[in-house]
Length: 118
Image 1: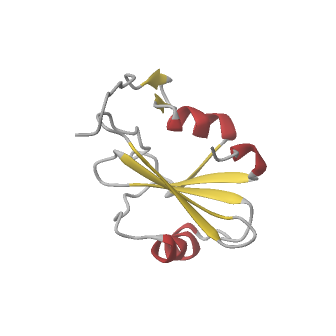
Image 2: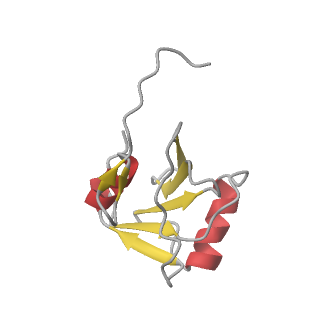
């Protein structure tokens, strides 16, 4: 698991992102749209149109890393009505978001249990 405590900042890109983008495409968004330094100890979060996937981009001193999470049934509650395009969250809020909580209302997703992939 990614240790979020080691990062100085966690930034959500509020606008929806085309998830065909990988490291280079997301890095351009960070530099040009978010106006943040890619090489600082920051996490950058992106969400797809259906809001069932997140990507987390970060620099780990030897190269870029890209982490991806997909929800099977629920949707991530993404801050679409905020005026800011870049929203900073803290470590606890990120942990809650990845755990399935609406970090603005503190309501979790239903837990899913599967016996196999279909």
